[in-house]
Length: 152
Image 1: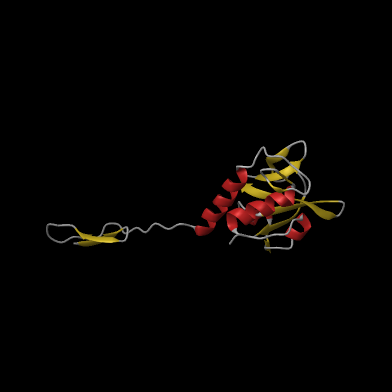
Image 2: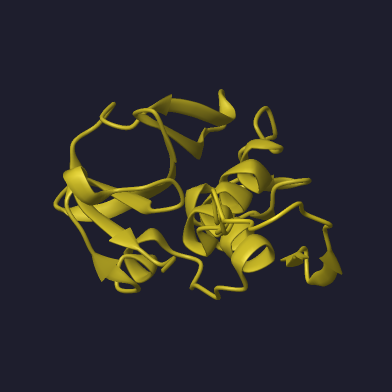
């Protein structure tokens, strides 16, 4: 009986007739893999410093500098360095649709003034304040005004 596995072919000697009991094909959800990679990349910076206007989490970032840096390095997505500007990219989705790697936007004074990266399990990672730096928080610690998906 001729078999193929892992891209290679071979033969198995059988006595009499043989039949296929199971035919399986491993599939990888490329979207889930990309999202996991973005989240894992972002989480390595937890504990790093918050610096207003900063663009490198190794030296200090603000919220939009953090999401810009992470998505650029982990997913080759280029975004502007402002939370309001970033809110205009991607596809707007609902809370029920959000997945790890999506961006959540928060407002203050009637305009978007903060952005965070959803990491799953009801949590975000974000460059929060000078006092707390890059940290994780519950996603709904503030009122969310917009959620966008940039990853397919």
